[in-house]
Image 1 (cartoon, chains in turn purple, cyan):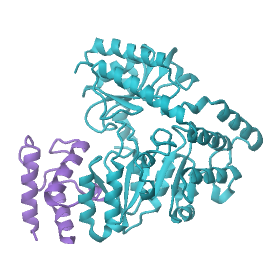
Image 2 (cartoon, rainbow over the protein chains, first blue to last red; image 1 turned 90 degrees about the horizontal axis):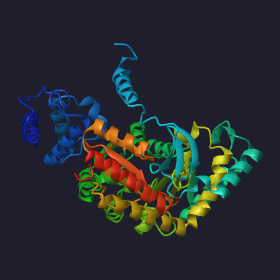
Image 3 (tube, rainbow over the protein chains, first blue to last red; image 1 turned 45 degrees about the vertical axis):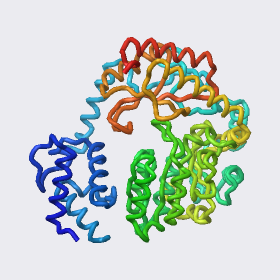
Image 4 (cartoon, each protein chain N blue to C red; image 1 turned 90 degrees about the vertical axis):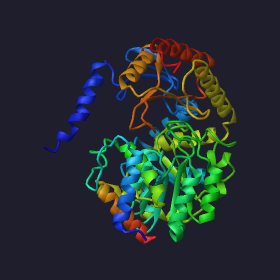
Length: 82
Length: 399
């Protein structure tokens, strides 16, 4: 079972590959505002992230996912529940 | 920041559209002449952007039934079926839908939108899951928002992705409602329903198919994609609308599950809406009979779709993934260019739908065209001539 920090590191690495022009990314980076992605691109990014972690992120939780850290915590929680 | 400030960007976008002289998202049909012609912006145009697939909106038998219903039963019902009572014709139409699909249970709703809201907000509860195709219609997304269930998307028409997500759900897969559409409204592509039905059976999930654009269009008897693919016995809930092939307004659901009939007592979009007017129900009853016996209408519809699709292909247009009565002509990312193309088509006497992101499945604009059984070959040739002229002027066809 991955720790939260391991999940976060893997997520950061995944996002850097998927959004190569994003610049510096950390836990506080906002998915929509700072990464320069529109809502459609965020949904595509999420699909890739879901594949990487083999989880499905419910649409219902997305309003609470603003930053990379929020997403990492959600993925960590979903992995724990599996 | 006030309550109304959030509308400012939208207002500015609207002003920019107004600068064009006509707003593609607020077109006024000054006079409707037939299923395929209207007066728009002072000129006669061919309608190639409706959902009038069988061209029944002006069918004399539908009109006569609606007129008779207005005269005998009045203009409206003034209340919901639960609080104010069912009219006999509402129940008759439900029986006729059940017979048409050979299913024991059927419910009629006041709109197709409400059918999806009712099903999705009521069937799956707090511990359940809704698994929807990413390209599903807004009514399906809105129904999901009203539901207490967990909502998960799978990649459009990707059966492997659906399989993967059902696998991740483990035991909860048996509490999952998979939702797909027969024909998708923007690209006109069909769901790979046979494979989807096989996957849902393997996991013990439930399957709902929205046949809004496929009713009357697919299947020998016009029942939609599930009939065409031979998987009707594997579909748990079929929903649809009267507002396309049936040429009226309303929605329906049929099912082998008794729960559908019980849902009337729990589904707020059913309970708290006025029931359909007598005229709508009366014309729909006739249209359903015409649709059922409409093999020749379907043949004409598909012949028209093929003629238009092939003509656009010859022009070099980028089209959707498969031949269908919904024919998207894919433009580029430039909204200004797309608006100009749409406006010039209209000025040339052609009405189609301009669709822009985020309403499109990707970042490109598209012209959503649709065919009707009522189009004549001459009208289709005229459409193609206008497309050729406008696209050639904009250099978009050869992209």
